[in-house]
Length: 389
Image (cartoon, rainbow, N blue to C red; front, side, top):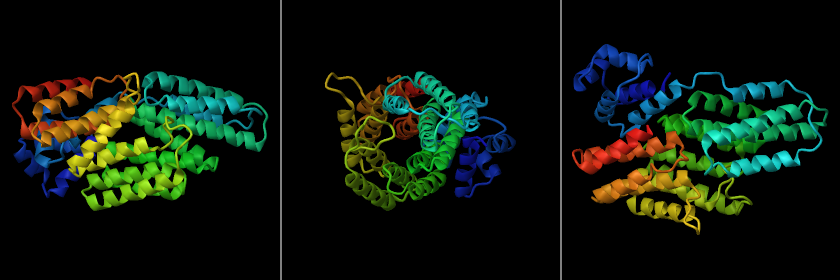
């Protein structure tokens, strides 16, 4: 079922409203609202905004509708999963895989800045190479190592597919990656597959599902580094569920875990967790908790760490969400012009994670509509956001 309908029903029932009562408040046709909840229709922009306002979902329904529209074009069978099925049919592998391991690592280090479609295509190309290598004779250890390489590639491809709004393909690829992690008995790959499940649920406003996935992933991963990121997703889900004490406790626990692990060899690897990435998660949690002083502090740190000595943005996706965080805190401080300037700047990067960007941008949009519905600056922000959607 599309995300919009599920979230709409949950929000409506939480407020004790029948479909008929909601139809009167909007106003709208009851039958049409029923079709929206059942996923048989998609809402128009104006109706989406009215439903979001009446149900008080703070932009979540607007984001869900945009993601459903992006996913509607993604209904073809996943090429990635087909490649993984072919790989499972093989019984052999090459003797030497060192180059393949190094390449997979380099591709993972390019996730933060490289064009998503281009990175997906190259990742699939290397997955084809794994299929070819698995058709040669090898021992059990080498076979397992190739499964591990395929697992990391599947995780990477699934991430960029989700960034592109390919929700169906991303979930299929994520599931295949988890199966590879289980087959290779590789707790880190399995943990990251759970982390992706939590991330997908979080950006689709399925907060309880995100919390469940984050905790299941921690159990599966044990003391692997991915456990830190799973704790971060737990904190973000708790913050969105209104459990601010639980979110802060999780952040403290995750920070201690990170300190115990020490610095990673390649902090630019997407499948590593470093102090810079932890600041990014703390920023998100404190923005939701409306602890604006800390949220702004962490956002500025994310911007500082993401900018190279030459002024080049090394982490465009983190930078965009940091700017949107600054937009939200500026709005709460009554600084409309600064808020819109930061918000519009967040949309200029060409490397985007569409679901995550829309989720945070929706929060800023709702704050603007609530505080400054008729200002020219608000219209400027909305036009920029509409172009992204």
